[in-house]
Structures are given as structure tokens and as C-alpha cells.
View 1 (cartoon, chains in turn blue, green):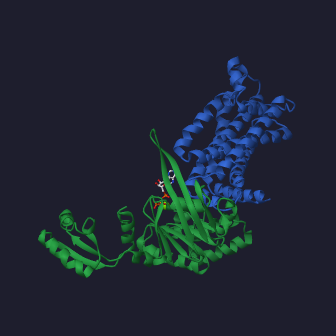
View 2 (cartoon, chains in turn yellow, cyan):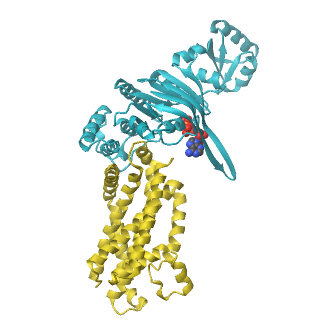
View 3 (tube, rainbow over the protein chains, first blue to last red):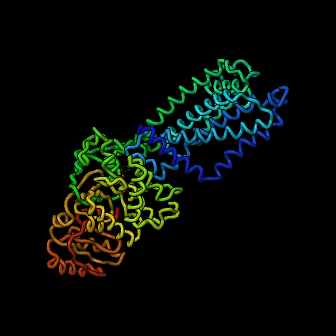
Length: 251
Length: 314
Ligand SMILES: Nc1ncnc2c1ncn2[C@@H]1O[C@H](COP(=O)(O)OP(=O)(O)OP(=O)(O)O)[C@@H](O)[C@H]1O
Ligand SMILES: [Mg+2]
């Protein structure tokens, strides 16, 4: 009960500050739209598929997962600014739940990601993408879990390293192999066996495969429940770890 | 209201390859009575903030015990948090929020209902003369206004004890005097105020009792006048031209002496007897005199006799 109340307090505060910053909203919407418009002409020939709709079925889920990963991973920078301003310390002297300090922030990130995802999906519908609403909602669940995990991870790391200078290279080092080895932008179907072997160890490639299956309308594919399960477990672990960092001493 | 025994904290830090342990606080015993303005006086790096952060449950002590407002720091930090307020040295406001938003949120984090948080916020804004700016973003505030918001945030939930870490550093004399009034008002409302400072006049004028901290240890405690009485005798300050300090120190080496850029300070039994002797000694050594002044010991003199250093220099 207290956790719920505290979480919603932090969430409201963070959401309010976000909405107050129109620049962020513009960038958050503009960027994916550019991807969609500028990548679109390349898609059909590159993926060797017959129709635009088919190309978007492959590309849009990848784009959404990409946004979920990166949107989450870079939230730590905002937290470092808060650390520096003394806002975190101010929260930590109150009896507020430490888990709520994390969850309120991460949920804000999840909600803003889903809002982005909805905009992109609607736009893609204009380009002949077709997806069942039930499958779409499951895909959004996958995205929510991904962004919950990456944002919690990013907050936890921010609390450990405490400086932008350390966080930036760290996040890039994590993000790069994750991105290259997950088949996010292009599926790994045509990749050599060894590359696919490595990708199997990348949890995000399971998430991408699951999301693609959902956009294909293939609800029964094992990729779907496997991806969801892997992401749920990792999100839980990331949240528990990051919440512990919030309750430990931070300078 | 606050009782600590043997509170200790050390930090491990790395300088290049070398690992070093900094003993920031080495065994602090404190007793602060209810309704007191208690001052923690010490130079930079003395360990004031570290002690305060331990008492505010922000860092865990390596050793020792503390009871704050009846709650045990080690056994029940949650209860300590409910009973205290803490205002950090570096401030705590978010540039993009307004003072009113910050105060309402802070009250709600302490579990206060929405309506009560709003009412209490209006009351505190009024008391701290912030109502006029309450709905402007914090980034537009002056240093003094910002500091008042910080303190308002620390007492929004009406704690029994409030810790203020250097509340007046960086403020102009007028804002400082204003802040002293705020602190006295908090005490009048029944709060126990624990304040750190490195201003001597502040410790002297504002605090009922002080502890002087140096290098992680408390070197003296008492009321300001008690501490000053402990040093028997007088202080003679001799003003000099900058070039003649060393010559003067040479000529006066029979006395307990402290040298400064443009003067020396001598600790003597009886000023009236000592001054003619001092003048003769300087005359004999041909040291030109800028001025001479006799006064009662100050807190700085207390610090000097306890630590061998002057607080003004460090
Ligand atoms: N997180 C930390 N890691 C390493 N060393 C620290 C840490 N915090 C404090 N110290 C060291 O502990 C010592 C005491 O610091 P502290 O901040 O308590 O001093 P202070 O009395 O508050 O000084 P000031 O008047 O400058 O605020 C200093 O030497 C400081 O460098
Ligand atoms: Mg300090």
C-alpha cells in the first residue's frame, strides 16, 4: 500500500517534469518517425520481401525494441543530474520506500516509451502494416518489460558510478554489442552459423524474435513466451538490484 | 535529544595506484539537549558533514552508537528518519520545479496527506517569506532564497530535530542575519537545531553550545563563553608591515606567538603588564609598529590553543 502510494508520488513528479519539457517530446517523436520515413524506401529490396507490409512487419518491431533498449539505457543521465542537485539525498532522508524511488522513475520511462510505440505503430499502419490488436498488446508488454529492465539497469549503474563521464562510455559499450548481435535492425536469418550462435546468448535477440513473431501474427511461436519470460525475469532482477542501490549510501 | 558514543567513519579512496584510508570521523561523543541550538565548528574536511550524514541515516557508521529523538540509529533508522529533518550542505532543490511543488512533494514523501501537505506548505512559505516566489522555478531564485527553500524542505514535516549543514555559507551578511533569525524561530517552535559552521561569529552568536571539531575528533565542547574562559589571560594583536613579521617573531620569541600576513598574535597572562615589554622588545629590534590591540580571547583563540592552528587560515 505504502509502496503503491510512494511509487505514484514519484511517478507523478517525474512525469510532470517530463511533460514540462517540450524539446524532449519533440525529439522522442521526431526521431523514430524519421527512421520510419527514411528507412522505408530501402526496406523492401533489402529484406528481399514482396510487399511493403511484409517489410514493416520485420522492421517496425525491431525499431520498437531498439527504442525500448536505448530509451531505457540513457535514463541514468537524468538521475546523475538529480544526484548532483541533491534531490536524491533529500528523498533518502525521508521514510519513502526505496523501491518506489526506482519504480516511480522506471514506470515513467515505460509509459513514455509506450506512448512513442503507439505513435510509431499508428504511422506504420499508414504504410500498410497490419497487426492484430491482441498481438499488438502483447508486443507492448514485451516492450514495457524491456524498457523497465534497461531503465532500472541504467539507474542502478548511475548510482554506482555517479558521473556522466563514466556512464556514457559504459552505456555505449553495453549497447553496441547488444545492438549488433540481436538482429534488431535486420534479422539474423541470413547470418553465418557462428554469429547466430552468439546471438542466442543475447537476451535481446529473443525479445526481438518474440516481438517479430507477434507482428507476424504468429502468437503460437515459442519465441513469444520465451522472449516474454526472459525479459520478465531480467526486468525483475534489474529492478531488485537497482532498488538496493537506492537504499545503499550514495554521495 | 541527540546522544552519540564513539561514532566512527572512514573512507577508502584511491589516488592513482595508491589506496588510502581517510579517517573522516574518529570517535565522536556528543550530547545535545532538547530545544538547544547546537553548533559544530570546524575547518574544511574536519568531518562535520560526515558526522551529520551518519546521524541522518545517509551513511552507515563504521562503529559507535547514536540515539536521536529517542530512536536508535543502528536498530531503527526508519524511525530516526521520521523524527528528523536534514538540510544538506550543497542544497537540494531541482531547477525545473517550483518551491511550492518541492515542498508539497517533500511533505508527501513523509506520509502527509495531499490536503495537509498543501496547507503546511502555504504556512511554511509564509513563515520563510517565500510566498512571493513560491510559484517560480527554483532556477530563478537568488542564493539566499534558494537556501531558505532548502531549510523549509528540511522542516516541512515538523521534525523534533533538524540538522543544518552550513546554512549560511555563501550568503551576504544581511541574508546571514536573516537566516539566524529563522534558526532561532525554529528553536522557538520547539525544534532542536544542530548546525555546522566554520564561521566563528556564527558559532558565538547563534549557538547555545558548541563542539569544536578538527581532523575527525572533537577537541573542545561547551558554551561559547565557557570555552573562552578556559583560556586564561589575554590576547595581544600587534599590527606590522608585511616585511617585518619574521623580525618581530624573532624579537618576541619569549611569548606564545602566532604569525599572520600583517600581524602577530601573542597569548599573555596579563595584557597590561605585557604590552610595555612587547613595545620595548620591538623597539630594541628596530621593528616598526603598525598598531597594537589588547582583547579577550575569541573562539578562534580557543581553536588555536586546542589544535595549534588558526581556524581562519585553514
Ligand atoms: N564519500 C567520500 N569518499 C572519500 N572521502 C570522503 C568522502 N566523504 C568525505 N570524505 C573525506 O572525509 C573528510 C571529512 O569530510 P567532511 O565532508 O565530513 O568535512 P566537513 O567538515 O564537512 O568539511 P567542509 O567544511 O569543507 O564541509 C575529508 O577529508 C573528505 O575528503
Ligand atoms: Mg561539510
